[in-house]
Image (cartoon, rainbow, N blue to C red; front, side, top):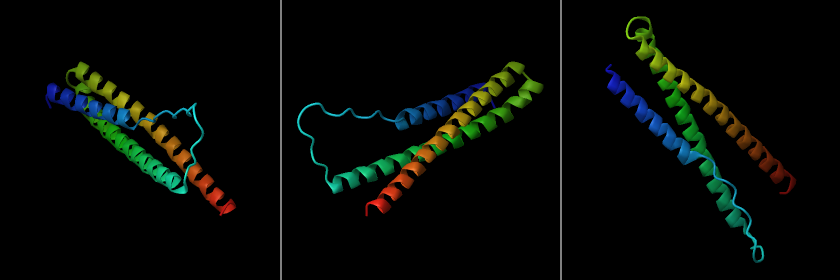
Length: 137
């Protein structure tokens, strides 16, 4: 595979991962308003917010799973493509590919840990909600 095609493929994958990371990163909490009285919140409004939050959380988890899959494929391809040149051919190309594979593997580990934390928080929130529904029917 020519080096230009390989580099173009890696740049496209990196740009896609960067786009997904920016698109799915967590938003900060909205500060409470300072003026006026507090508006009463209806049960329908809370239910709609809850559904929206669950949909956003599901999209975040799906994005993380997609990112993990792409990083795993990139790491595997770069390892497979880098071993041959490192042993036989132009060593600099093999070293570059193995370095990219190491970076992809590091990103894979970080995203996997982030996904585990997100799933633990979601499970804890669901358990708390179930307990609250049992305590206050």
